Length: 543
Image (tube, rainbow, N blue to C red; front, side):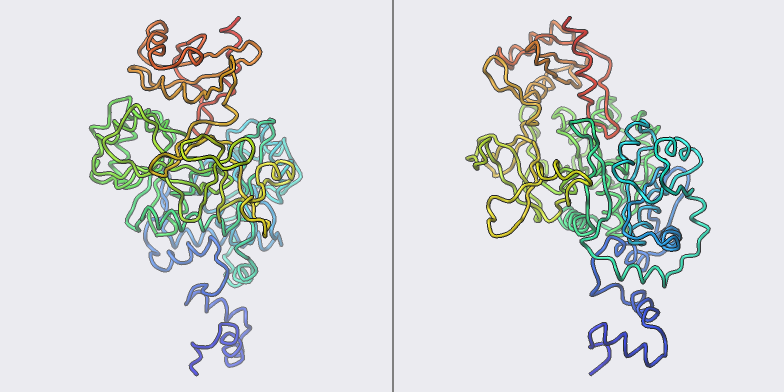
C-alpha cells in the first residue's frame, strides 16, 4: 500500500519515525503542503487556502494600507504567537481599533490562537463599554495609545497590548499548528454584543461551525467569485460585516474598506466605488437611500456592479426603484437575518418591475434554515396569517454569554422535534407567508401596539407613509400612557399636506395624532433608526 493511502495519523507516525522528527513538526509541514484535510473545519482554513492560492493578491485595502493574502497571514500569525506565548487558551480577547484592517488581523490571530474575539466600538460610551467588559471579562485588550486609557478607566482587570507591539513577534508556525490541532468547529469564534431591552447589552456566542456554515452557504447561493471587489460599509462589530469580510476571504476576493468620511458624501462615495471597480455592495438601506436621494446614481458605472445586497432593516421601495433603474444589469438581493442566527435566514432576489406599494418579501430560507410561524398560543398559523417567526438553523448561536435567563427565553426547544433537545430561535418578528411561499416582514412584536381595541403595527404605518411623494423617511412611536401616536418624518412636504395624504391610505384608528417634520432621524452606529431616542422626544410634542 502507498503511504499516501494510509490514514493521516498512521502516515504521520511512519514519516516521523523514518525521518527521526517529532510528530508535531511532521504535522506542521503536512498541513502546509496538503491543507488541513481531515481536521476540524475552522475559520482560519479560509486564510490558509487563499494564502496558498493567491499569495500576492490584494486581500484588504483602506485609505492607509493594502495587504496581500500572504502579508495578511504573516501579520495574523504574529498576533497568534503573542497570545500563545502568554498561554492564553479558549478565552475572550477584546479588540478596540479604528482601522478595520488591523481589526481583521487581530480577530484572525485570535482565532489561530484558539481563543475568541469581541470587537468594541471605539466610539462607544464608557458606561456601555463597562457593561460589556464586566460581562465578558476578557483576558486581554488589543488597542492603541488612543483608547487604552479610556477603556482601562472602565475596566482594569486585563492585560492591555498595543497592536504595533504584537507585530514584533515572530510567527512561530509550529507552535501555532499545535494549537490549531486542538481547536474544534464547536469552539467559540466570537461574541457579538447587541442591544438589550433592559439596557444591558447581550453577548451572542458564535461558533466556528455556525460562522462557516453561514459563509459557505452565502458564497454558494450568491456565487461570489475570486475576482469580486467588495466595498465594506458595516462596522466589524455588526453581524452584517461577515458577508464581505469572511465571504471575500472564503473565495479569495478583495475588500475595500470605505473611508468613513465618504459615507456622508454621496458623490465622493460613488466616485470611490467607480475608482476601485467594486463589483459587490453589502449595504444598509439607509446608505442606499442617502445615495439615491442625492441624485448621483447617473455617475455610477453600473456595468461593473454584479450584486447589491441590502441587510439590517426593510428597504423603502422608492429607494430600491431608483437603484434598479440606475443598475438594470445588477442582481439585487434582500437579506434577512439576525445576530443570533449568524445572519442566517432568508433571501429574496428582486424581480422587476418594482411596485412602490407592496413590501419587499424577506424571501425563502437559505438551505441551512427552516422557518416556523407561530401564533400567540404556539400553534402554526395558516398561509397568509401573521405570526411570530421562529428559526431553526445550523448557524444558530450558542446563546447569550453569562445570561442563561435570556438564553432560555429566546432559544427554545423545537416543538417539532420531541426526541432531541434541538433549539430554535424566537426572533420577535411578525411575518406571514405569501402565495409564492415567501415570507413577508410585517413588523416587530414589540412594535405592535393595541389602541382603541385594534392591534396596530407601527412599521405598517411607516411603510405606507414612505410611499407618499416627497417623504424620504419616517419613524412612528407610541405613548402608551396617553394612547397617542406620533410620526416623525423628513421630506419636502408640510405637516398638513402629509396628514391629508395619510388619511387616504390608512384607516382612522391608525392615523397619527401628531406629525412632526425634522431635518433627520437619529441613527444607531449600525445605521438603523434610533427609536429609543425618538421615544424620548415624544413628551415635548404631546404636552
